[in-house]
Length: 157
Image 1: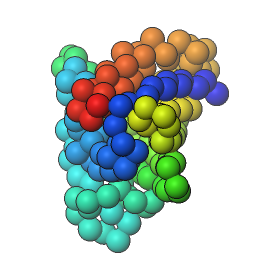
Image 2: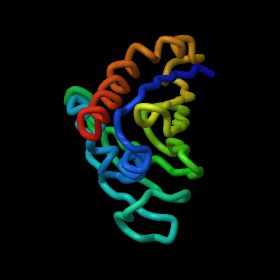
Image 3: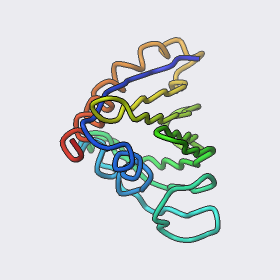
Image 4: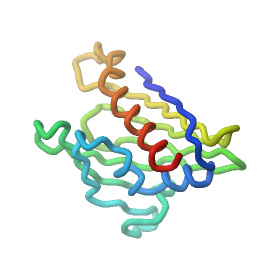
């Protein structure tokens, strides 16, 4: 299965970076405008609407319309894991419904000298016959994740 990875260091405290990425508002702030993202709902594991923190068991329903040229596509993500330790944290979301046959995104954060290291690891399958073009997914993912990392630096660094 193809994998996309990107890593950067943000000149900001670990707690601030982790908190920012733990909220649906962080997702909205980091998604490029050209994706036309709308978070339709966020529900915590206990059924709470718009929870402060996206804990394990939270579900985010959104729609996207890349470049505004396609009909809106539903994207439902489920937080399958969330762990926080001393100066490091991770959460993993899986796409339950959306434009990819498979999408598992692991977000890792680590306090390092000079700030916080952010590492994105995405396992995916593209919606093409036999997954033959899977290794080329980085062509679309690179601008999106570059934007996410640069925006994190702008907002928190």
